[in-house]
Length: 259
Length: 147
Image 1 (tube, rainbow over the protein chains, first blue to last red):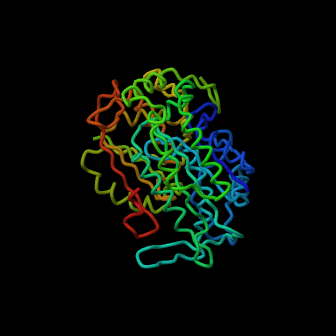
Image 2 (cartoon, each protein chain N blue to C red; image 1 turned 60 degrees about the horizontal axis):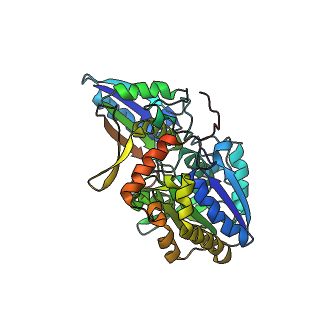
Image 3 (cartoon, rainbow over the protein chains, first blue to last red; image 1 turned 45 degrees about the vertical axis):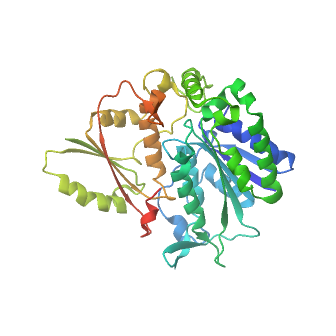
């Protein structure tokens, strides 16, 4: 099984998103999946220019030639796609937003729009072979409330569900979202070492992705808790620690940093 | 009243967003309103790189690009109008980049628990800005705009 991973954290090295993601991928690797891991911060990807070339062009191809063309090709080849991003102002990070637009705009390039009752769909031009593509989102936020992820999840779910193929079947299947609150704590090795339970759960989820190309709903419920509950500390303690960690973060210089 | 209009459409003045925005701004004219209109596609705005330096140094962003102009306008304005089409059930990535860069330095305070909710407290920002959102999408369903 081929899995493509797009990490939308601007500073992937040692970031909470990457730490959580790596445990999930470890489970996938152990079950023998081939993983392509891309850090979007290292790639050069332009924003969609809204030219609608992909809507009129026969193959639904994008007119812009950059790293997104490579990602688009790899995305088509893989069976599972994992998008990872921190929650930024109730949306995903702009790096992931850019690639979501570029990847899915050509898919929504409808031969036609289809109205079924109150609902509407796009019938895609792209050819799909074999099974439906599975999509998993991995999101984390510095806040503890998991409801905060709802607007973003709603919007990504909608964008996948409206794309149909010629037989009226969904071409992409939204597997679910792993949403972890208070994720800043994952940047602290001491606290994260306490979350042995979470590490095990993530690994199990990774294995399930490869074996069943799905994750059980119960497992989602077990994983999707704020990190302080996994680590067994109180909420107040978690926030005083988060505030301290945010001050002391010293990420290594990265992408185009000029100071 | 100082008003800043950000148009997040990549099609700029040819797009449908502009067509909706234009009569709206027409109606605002003549009421002692100073309108600054900006197209985000024309501006050079990098993505936030998550260095969190703005959390250390009181809300100064280290990236030097057109965002400095935008931020200055934002701090001085009374009304901010965000106009964007719906791409993939959300705002466009141009708007996404600008919002991230605008708000990250504002959220540089500490997290506190206020009435059970977690909020950022900013100790330096003392003004209140009205924000208005104008969007348009290709579908007619109300719920397109929900998220």
